[in-house]
Image 1 (cartoon, rainbow, N blue to C red):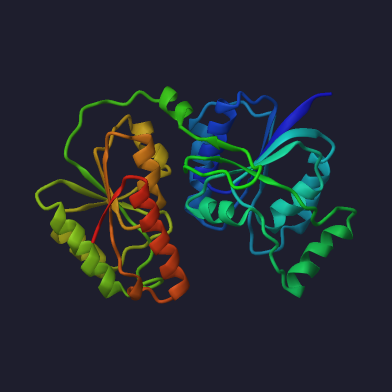
Image 2: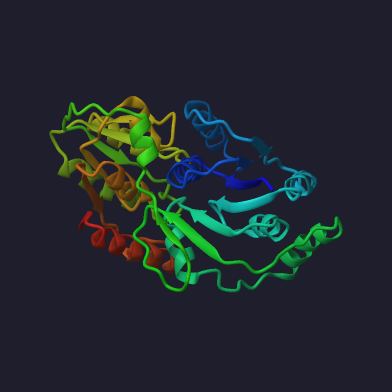
Length: 328
């Protein structure tokens, strides 16, 4: 009997990592299920990755996120894909919809691919029971009305570029980005350009005034070098931030692709990567091992929420353990 592999992607990085898994494990008969997020840029970049990376899928399903419920879209797709047998399921998220999909399929193993540092938290918890609210339970019960299961327990394995240490009996496969490195020939014409990774944290996680102070520290540190500010896809720089960057002759660029793919498509090898606590600092340090990667510290007391501050502290500790210099 023919078996398939199902890949569930919600972001460009998830899709990139899924493509890496297909190459690393020599997977055949692959089906892609794209679950849109509302962000327009995220949707466009997903389509760009699909168009740019030459791969022939068995079939592609697409659920577009709208202001209305996507319940019937999910039901229709789940009923169609449940007719097949699967070897592996790869997903970038473990959430209620993923749980419903997994509950209704026959498969051997589920793998989580990276989409930022959420992998670390997920590996730490290893699918510990999550207490759901009554409203969440009722929403999931809607699938039962259409003859579908809403949840069944399952184990999670990992395909990750993080150096995860096995905790139980989970399978951990290292993502070394071999597929992307094979597809794109990088020029070794190094220069001193500094790529500063933006983050949409001002006025959301810390005060804009504090962000400007810390951004100024980075600009001062790299004074005399050509600096390019790579704007995050969810980021809209304020007037003050634009003025500070313009004053220091820093170009603000919105990438056409996810930053992990942008350099490869352009055939460039970055030599200076910096920012605050963006996961891309770590990702790029793995993809471009000769690059000088630095993270600039933001004191935990500056964050609006103590819980978020603790998470960011863990990021910096992780960077240090990974060989990335954290500058205070």
